[in-house]
Length: 142
Ligand SMILES: [Fe+2]
Ligand SMILES: [Fe+2]
Image (tube, rainbow, N blue to C red):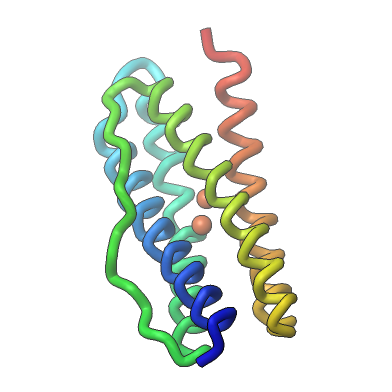
């Protein structure tokens, strides 16, 4: 396997470990969130999970198709107990994820993996939506 292909696979496995982490983060925050907005935030965090799970599935399929072994590793999850800190932490995670996918898209194009590049566009668009919602929620938080 070429070095570039191995680098792409390693990157995709890093992305996958972070999608597993996103699922754990949103699921833990949904249970742990307290305060006057618990109901809304619990529903908001839970609603993110199916899309992150879809992302994990897509990455897993692509890693296998490229001849790699999908990781079961979970990237570290920042545990906080304040509702605003949860939103801030999720915002950081979504921003970092977008940065990783933009880099991965460039690697995919470089290797002429155009199907993967298009799938990564969808992931970038999904994570950008998550990012924007979190940003707007935090904009009016006292
Ligand atoms: Fe995701
Ligand atoms: Fe996300």
